[in-house]
Length: 183
Length: 225
Image (cartoon, rainbow over all chains, first blue to last red; front, side, top):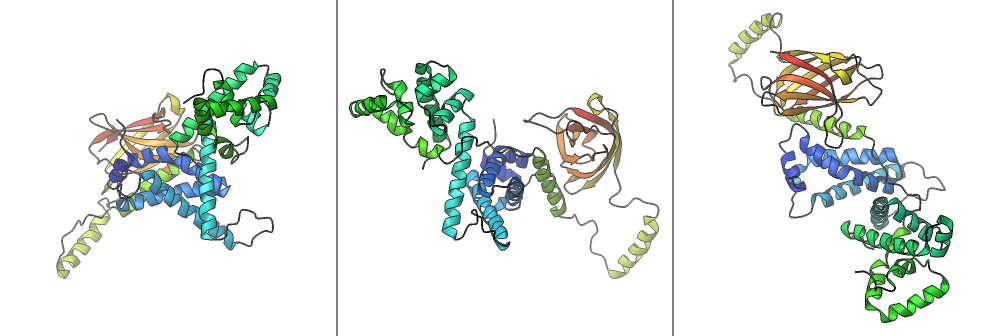
């Protein structure tokens, strides 16, 4: 049976082989990277953030208290701080007139990071749909086509297009529930 | 929850506003009377706003495969550095220390120092290793074993990241960290494995593990203590 996140963090304190860290990395690095990429818009910076998050994790594993937060929440909190640091470093550089991503106050930073988490989660949720379900959502929502127009364009019977769209949204709703996404 | 038998397939398209105008109108009337369909529509109502957060072609960003090794290497290096050093000598009176220094000065020339290997292995290529060859020299450290690895002719076409394993006498494989080969197929690395010399007699180099599966064996060697 797989060890819980909290158990892995606890074992990390005496871990010299890296096995516990590797397991935690495999569980959380992809989504932390997605979050950081969404917030920073830069792959390289996002990878630096992920590295720093895991360095903080092993250096401060003694500080982790499972009664206060889940490991996931804790990792996201570390990532948020690292992303804010990255923004601050970027803010020190002279701003370009067209730099729309520059963040100002703390409230604005918080809101922007919440949006970044949400964007990453929605992207990840869409990626979990089947190609057929993604396609109907793409055509109907992003393409603005009606069911009839989609049926004409794809050659799929209109009844199938309608039921496929309903199933796609239901599945998406379930994925969002699983990821605890809501606005 | 899903809609009623007659209108279930219309709820999703309705929420996306993707029905024809007359169908949208008919559906609005139906929702006012059908608790099942109206509950279904409510549960899906926030999806269009969430979908608006991303573009149609948004893709999940994928981490560089090498990052995991970089993170783990950094961890093992830091752990090895921060391991408490064992006190090897009791406190001695100054004259005794002076004598010891003189004796040590003489012995250094003929006796290996603390970093000297306690075991050595010649590494031989396995089928996945092409013509790779190398050596591994082990020394005991507080965290386990420090391994100095030298390798040549490593295949670099299908990834350059390799892992070192110490195979214990009970058959358990202990990960000793990972390293990258240079573009010319050579590699030099210093890694730390959480196993004491004497507890294992075989060293194996594999390709990087993926999806929880150990990579193919590239080189293997038997230790001489």
